[in-house]
Image (cartoon, rainbow, N blue to C red; front, side):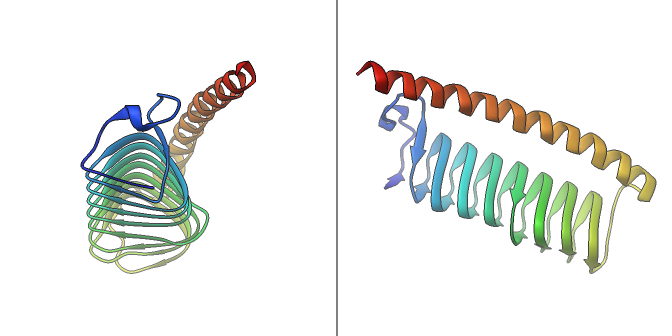
Amino acid sequence: ISMSDSSDSSLAPDGENRFRLRELIRSRAGRVQGEQVRLLQSGTLLVDARTLEINQGAVVYARGDRLEMRSSSSALSFARGASLLEQSASGIVASAGSVNFHPRASGAVIARDVKLRESASGSVIARNITGTVRTLFGPRESVLFALVAGLAAGVAFAITRALVGNSRAADGKSQRDD
């Protein structure tokens, strides 16, 4: 499925502005899910994909195995694997794998390996850091910031889960009623 030049929420079968698709171009959506998702000049509240590529887009909450952002922004980004962020901004980036930054900024970065180039971050917590690190906080402040950011991310995740759980429960109920 592809969408382009559209922001019509009536395209969703349940009327909740949720889409299962591969590509979103110059559009907006509430929730997008898929194996491989590509957003181009688009905005979403939540994206959940195995492979996620965002070009000139904005996402509130991005989650996937592999994440690539170019000239984009996100509030929360979680990746189970590698993340590449070029000329992008993110409030919090967390990755079980590596995070590779090219000119970009973030509030907090938590990952196994972090590679920075011409980037700034409020806090960086990683096993291995390569490149010049420009942070706003020292080690003690970084730990405190990470705890607060983790708590905020946990609350955001719980709210998202509750909203997604409620919509799935409603989907199941409406299917049984049919």
